[in-house]
Every structure is written in structure tokens, then in C-alpha cells.
Image (cartoon, rainbow, N blue to C red; front, top):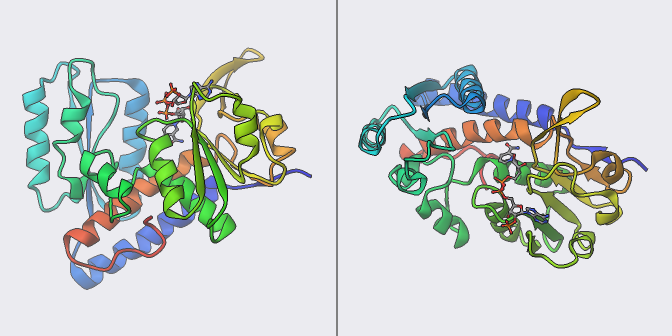
Length: 296
Ligand code: NDP
């Protein structure tokens, strides 16, 4: 039987509606407008597209968007000084520095200079530590989006076997922490994992965050499992450029119980969760109740 398709595009639209409704209430009842500052250094075309989409969606949900575009040769002191200004600006509740940064800039230093309470990407070392110890953190957007879809599909995740393929700081590791937080039994697989097929076939929940087009095939999926495909890969096929995930959708969807497609799965949830995180940060900064269902 064909797997149920988890529609990330529709889910993200619902998250944005929820954020917009909460933002409207904040304006009316508290005179508060959440603000997101996005900093882009350089002219990387993909980053420019992402930053444009983030700004547009921020405004659409009623929040303020502040874009700071700096030239590719911006020095560290200038960038750190801008972040310091944003850290101290009460109208800015979320700060996102678009990655990757040009090679002469130290990404860790830059990210760790953001006020952790405004770190809506959840990459600051304090937020990593808070998430790892089960405390209230700002949670990285992509894994948060995956968690929301999994909770929506399953209700409770307690006791399920989850396998996360990939151990990056931005997806794999925080995803594993979130699943552990929801009481899954979690395995993290990576390039040195032995018999990846057997490991994956033990998963009730299989999250692929590898960066290798269509690497996870149907024979690696336990019948009935839920498959979350984080991968975004551009490939040439039949003379056309095509977007595919890290999962071979055709073979995996014939075995899985539910699966996210690419495009239209995890991708749209990432920006929706950025908006949710900005709203959460604004509420926390003002001692107000956090939006329900939009945090970990
Ligand atoms: P990274 O390159 O940082 O990490 C990839 C991980 O996959 C590494 O841990 C690596 O293992 C592991 N890996 C690589 N090859 C294999 C293999 N043959 N078998 C098992 N594991 C392997 O990637 P990211 O985490 O940044 O991104 C992963 C994917 O998710 C990419 O396609 C990216 O484009 C996409 N992405 C999508 C987002 C969205 O909004 N939907 C957001 C962010 C990323 P090792 O550590 O041993 O090298």
C-alpha cells in the first residue's frame, strides 16, 4: 500500500496562520510587534533567495522584518558591531545570520555573539546546551518542523524507535535531542555506521539528513515506518534540473506508512518554524505566555 503523504506545505500554512493570529493578539492586547532581523553577508544566490523568502513571510504574518545586507568583504568587527546593535535593540526579538558566511569570517564566533534569547536559529552554544539538558531553548528550525509533523501524525512518540541518519549540528544532532525529549529510543547514524540498512530497518521513525540524493531506498525502510526526508538536492535527470531528497521516494513510499515528499515536505516547515521561534522569543522577552504547539 502506498504511504500517506505528509503535506509539509499545508502544515506550514497552518503554522503561519497560527503565528499570524497570535501576532495580531499581541498587537491588540499588548501593543507588541515581534521583529526579526536577518543578516546576509555576501551575494550567494541561494542565500539571497532564502533571505528574500524569510523577509516576505515575516511581513505576511504581521511581524516586522529588518534586513541587513553586507558586502562579501565585510570584516569581523563590523559584523560583530551590527550584531551587538541588534542584541540591544528592543524592537528586534529574533536575529538570524544567514549561513554559510564567507570563509574569512568565523561562523562559531559570530553565532555565539548573538544574544541566546534572540537566537531564533537555535545555533548558539547556550541553546545547544539548554536543548541537550532538556531545558527551555530556542530550537533549530528544521528539526523543530520535523518534530511538529511527527507529533501531528502520531500524537505521542513515546517508546518509538527513531533513527536519524546524519549528525550535523544544524539538523542531525538537534533532531536526535528532540526525539529523545519526546521519549523515543534514538539511534544516530552517520558515514561510519556499519550496516546502515539494518540500522534503518529498525526504525519506526526514520529521519534522513544526509545530503546525498535518494540514498535511503525502500529496502532500508521498515514496513509501516514514518519517513521524514530533510534532504534538498538538485540533480540533473532527463536533461532537467530536479529537486530530490535524501530518500528515494518511489521505493520508500511503497513500504513506509507515512512519508514527507521533496519538495513540499520539510522545506516549507523550516521558515514557518523560524516565524514561530521569533514569536516565541518576543513572548519570552516580554514575560508573556508562549504560543501553544509551536515550541518543543
Ligand atoms: P551535513 O553535510 O552537515 O551532514 C551530513 C551528515 O550525513 C553527516 O553527519 C554525514 O556523516 C552523514 N552522511 C554522509 N554520507 C553518509 C552515508 N553514506 N551514510 C550515512 N551517513 C552519511 O548536512 P546537513 O545536516 O547540513 O544537511 C543534510 C541535508 O538536509 C542536506 O541535503 C541539506 O540540503 C538538507 N537541509 C534541508 C533543510 C530544510 O530546510 N529542509 C535545512 C538544512 C539542511 P559524517 O558526520 O560521518 O560525515
